[in-house]
Image 1 (tube, one colour):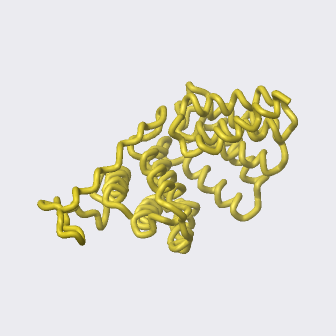
Image 2 (cartoon, one colour):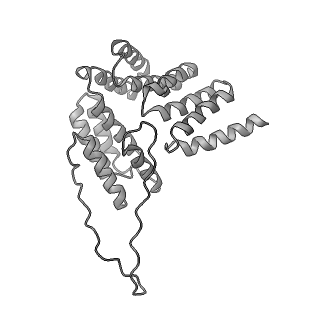
Length: 262
């Protein structure tokens, strides 16, 4: 892990976990002299990584962190057990222990494939404690149901939660989970409808890039107009040009436009 990535990871986790400094985060010591190369000449200090432009409405530091981790090379699965333990705490409604476990996992296993999910969970718990934890408890139970293969029960619980807490902070997470459930069941039209509720600019959701991609994919899956799907992909690229989804969607859009010209 580069020094810049370590600093960014520590900063995000420090802000996320109740504003306290992240465990194990240390301030790097500045180098006073340049290193000496094999030729005896001093080599210049490595230039710092350029700052990446942040996406529309995404939390400060979150997008840059995800992109830096993705650009570092192949990820591995070391630490999957620690992530599973954090997930178990979250699904059981033990949110404070879950936050500590997610933060510890992200710091100890920064190359794991699930670091992005751990950061999303941290942000979700931090920002979703309204209505005396009512919405987040419904969401956590629904996630537990989905993991156990009870998608219909999860769908019913999330739908009832939207009716009960229409102004809840996690309503975009409810809609996105419902979109995923509909997608997995092959109900493409419902998946698009739920995804667009998340992608609406008025929602200001950090899940909007994933929702726009899902809407485009599901439009194609149900045989909808390619122009409509390309419109969703184009929105993603225009609104979130630095999204981790952007490179794949840009290539997907290019191939789609080539087919439309045939």
